Image 1 (spheres, rainbow, N blue to C red):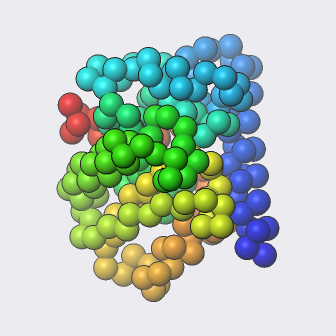
Image 2 (cartoon, helix red, strand yellow):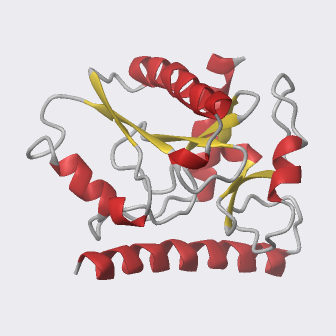
Length: 204
């Protein structure tokens, strides 16, 4: 059953990303935001093209594994080697992701520099999220490999703002992280872009 839940979750995400890509082609708008690029040859070059100190461009994307990409419009903070983005299916308001720009399936695949930057950016993001979403605590989570519930083969930190009574019991957060309940649906892209644009000024 655990494997079936993982496969079902991965299938939902894949189907959603395919639908977004197909919609973009149908509208013939090359700059429409989408989280999928099935070409696997140039993720690293795309990530390296954006200097850490530069303003985030309105088109383009960063890799989120060899299969998926995150459009710049949904990125609200970055460092030299990592970036922070809003979440497609947040568990609670303010649930964010911090991701390395270079594809790395597990923590062991990260350099020491990347690992340090990943957590440094996670700290900065949590400080802003605490203020903007009235968080009193945080759950920081990495599902490091398939047997830990990882469905996207790329290291990423879940930053989940917490408040008293937000889950029926505290460890339910980990169950819902691995197996989203059916009522949790993918968000509208415009909503995600708007959230990212609202957060971006706090990291300038």
